[in-house]
Image (cartoon, rainbow over all chains, first blue to last red; front, side, top):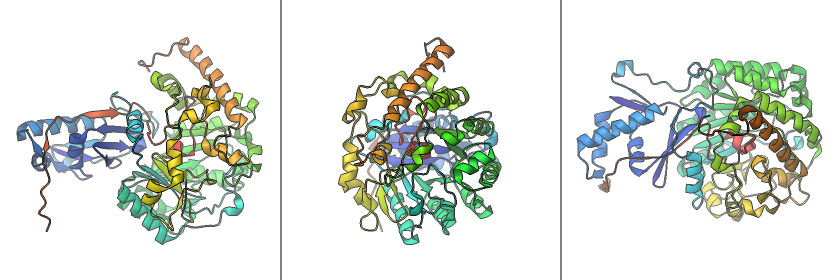
Length: 482
Length: 44
């Protein structure tokens, strides 16, 4: 028997546990130390079970080789059943498939799941990393330059002028590899504007990093498609604001951008490159955004919406004139729940135990598992939050910043209880308070300033979601059944 | 040449400690009941 990791599957060892993930279809598992030693023997090329067991036998005391082989095969069968491995008796007929749109059968890319129901791995890992933060996702702005001028963008247009240097980029990617980072996010501006975009993508994949690309796709070409498909397929997150060309183009400020972006999304799907559509909702597309959700779902793409756009990172707030009003929010959230199968599923499947806000919970993943750098080498908690400098990669290594930066350490010790206005709020579980959004809107940059619209949105959410639950299941969500 | 021998460890059957139920992403950790996501959540 032969076994291999699926081509879009990644494995990392964190201390005494192993973590296996297929980011594109959002399935992940955590295994114990022995399980991690088993998985470490796998690669993307099929390996013979006897060869694997022979190597493992030398690592253990207290087991005979037949028992070990039985356990390894049983463990690998379970991982294969859960969607992480390929296997076969015969190398000549071995199926080494990875992500393929045609296999989704009505499901959405990025939301498929066939894993069994042990304790949620997210919950497990949040707890595991609580006292020993581990950088797993690093966001890299390749360039702040952009060929669009979106009205809501958090980057001030006059600051869209810097490319990352190749020396810094290759060095940072190597550092990510050495630190065990799993995912690097290539963003901009428009990352495909960087002349070395393809080289960076190729290099990151050779380092076995999972690359997510945030792009408007207007610059997609054959060479880029080739690099996106190389080794592990990279997921592309693309902004699409409306299916009405004039509305999309009005938001991007570029006439004709809708047709190019839409056609290039279809091109990626044809090439089996997973696409996630990001659709921020604002005044301009409040009456048409749900067509994007429908279109995305028809093409098996998850569509992620965000109805509270943030102020610019330099504190300028003129882009907020495009933000939804309270009245708009009511209509938009109702429409979201009506059309978005992911949100419907989230509401009905949400684990009861995660619904209440625990004062000891972290606020978000920044400083715990994620961090961001912009093109000039400065490090921030996240791309939209650049009032808070965590370090400078021109002066210190990523490891030094991650370990020693007082700013990163401050983020780490923050808990829900520190946000006094929020921790006892009856709408807290319906809210997405964001420290970056707070900081950008606060005159003093404070992360503790909560814009009023955040609270209004949570209140509306509560009302609309509970009405939905009442209508769907008579107010009693059977969390096991969905 | 590295002659250091890898130390053997006591064998125990491997265990899956936790698994995703659906669409999970531990890096994010702030997706609310509404399904709305912040920049970090929706990218990672």
